[in-house]
Image 1: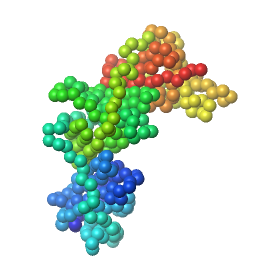
Image 2 (image 1 turned 135 degrees about the vertical axis):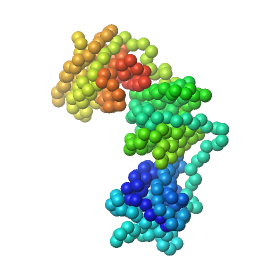
Image 3 (image 1 turned 120 degrees about the vertical axis):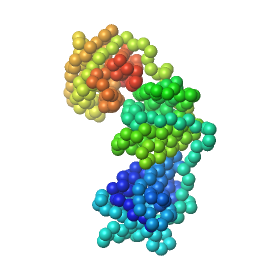
Image 4 (image 1 turned 60 degrees about the vertical axis):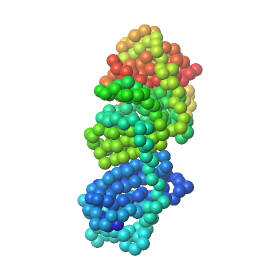
Length: 373
């Protein structure tokens, strides 16, 4: 193995691939990043047996070969060099790799690639593939990932439902206290319906990588057990969760008794102000919403401390509203909508509320209330 690569290219790739290195593992080999020098590039691979990320980086390759480098050390060493420096990697003796540029030199003990596990592969005829605009996929992830659960890696709440039907792609996430649904339309209808439950971590990593930029379409491949996403020079593959996602449609209210149209910026500012009191120990993280004449009142009250009361303009239709929410769950979706205003659909103080973008079903957010008294 002998190759040279520009630091900024390798550093970027390592920062992405390292997301698939486990924080804790009983298999020491998984704490490494596999580096394979091939024809005009090097291929980096990390795999925690659930999620695998692979990237190609342009390189001047003098001698091909592959070794597994300790992830933490190779990331730190490459990060030490300047972005425009060309770094040379060469096998010195046995498993010792010499890493140098100019007058600076490191030597790192690598491992042979024999024990590094292979990424899972799709079986011929058992998958469905399609292309999706990267901005569209990033938007779907932005509107859903935040609402999934973080407490368990086995429950359906820690996964994102990826559903294909007719000419629609739907992503759904829930932690049982709220549910977020995002929809995108495809020009070419899907031949068959398909549902995959993808782990939250996979979707978080995919969202972050897409956020680094690039406008290339994403090649999506789904099967009964695997999901893969290929775009630019990144390949991400993940095992699916072996649990079923409940019928989310039963959670979404079909009819409500009132509606308020509010500017997102107004509601965000009022909820943040109310949270100053609500986040105190005895505040239960709760803010109250009440409708008035052409306005929405956002308030919080903490005994022996004080209260906040903010009035913002609103277009109100139907019955009046008095309801309380966890302020964090109220604020989160506001940072993920693409419109100036948002609709709040409601019924009673104990009935789930529905947030939507005006005139569109591309984003639906269902939020369970908190008891007022």
